[in-house]
Length: 102
View 1 (spheres, one colour):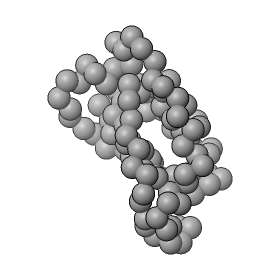
View 2: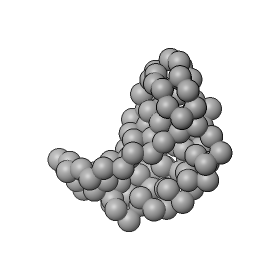
View 3: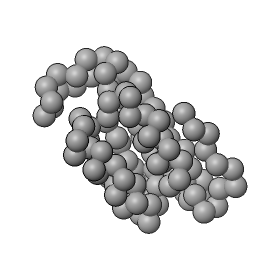
């Protein structure tokens, strides 16, 4: 299993959640994050953090879509190995209902 932490500009939420709804069984959005990086200081409300856990098979399809977007815009994707309880909850192929779109 892989944990994806996606930091991106607020207006990118619908597109990213649309991608995740095809490859993940859920995600968490942390709406108020701040920080400093390549594009300078980011104030509260400008960027968000989206966290999801996916199977290894779904990482590349997600990155294939998000990569070009993040090449043009501010953002970063952190990818880490993770162990989770009830890992079967994170396998999209076992999920019967689609995620709601935001």
